[in-house]
Every structure is written in structure tokens, then in C-alpha cells.
Image (cartoon, rainbow, N blue to C red; front, side):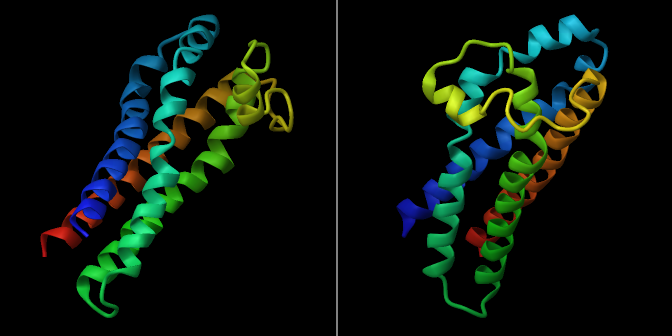
Length: 162
């Protein structure tokens, strides 16, 4: 059980760290022009894609932790809240962030696995030609993801502290 708790904390913390890093960059990135922004945007994908595995793994760890927790206890409900918050962070990625990733990467040459994951150029948002709207959507998605992930880590820490 201790190993599962540690894994859940680490995975949730990594998920929070990545989305929080994006959110904290927002003020500086808003000052960039289109070409600068699009150039900077491309640096994220290799490392952040690897780190992004923490989200689904964290959801699995939290679900396992929840299943092993006595029902109708404060700990159970705090873990349930952490699980819901981390699942919300992940859902925001697929609904808000990933469609914009397809737009940012549509002209990039990617490996087969990366192209399959990002599905570049397929299913672009309706307003994909407006780079500022795409930027704002992507940046806003990471602020929302940071909030959800911070909530998840906070609830998990509270659950494991009692």
C-alpha cells in the first residue's frame, strides 16, 4: 500500500508540475509575436509528451488507491476527489489542448508514433486559421489543467495525511 501511495503522489505531482509550468509561462508567452510563439511552441513536445504519461498512470494509481480505501471514510472521499480532479485534467487535454496541438504540429515532420498520437492536420478546430485564438485556447487549457492538477495533489496529500 505504501508503494502505491508513493506512486500516486509522484505521478500526480508530475502531472501538476507539467501543467503548472505551462500556466506560469503564460504572461511571457503572451508578449511573443506569431512567429516567435510558434517557434517556442515546438520545443515542448518531446519532453512534455513523455511526462504526459504521468496523467493516465496517475489516474490508474488513484483508482487503485481508491479501491483499497475503506468506503465512507474521509480518506476515501478525498482520494475520490483527487481522482476526479486528475481525470478532469486529462479530459481537458483531449478536449481543449490536443486539437490545438494538431494545429501547431501540422507542418512538422514527426516519427510514426508521434504522428499517430498527435494526429497532425486531422480534425483541426474550426477556428484553426486564427493563430491568436489557437494560442489563447491552448494557454487557457493549461491554466485549467494546472488548477485541476493542483486540486488533485492537494486532495491526495490531505487524504494520505489523515
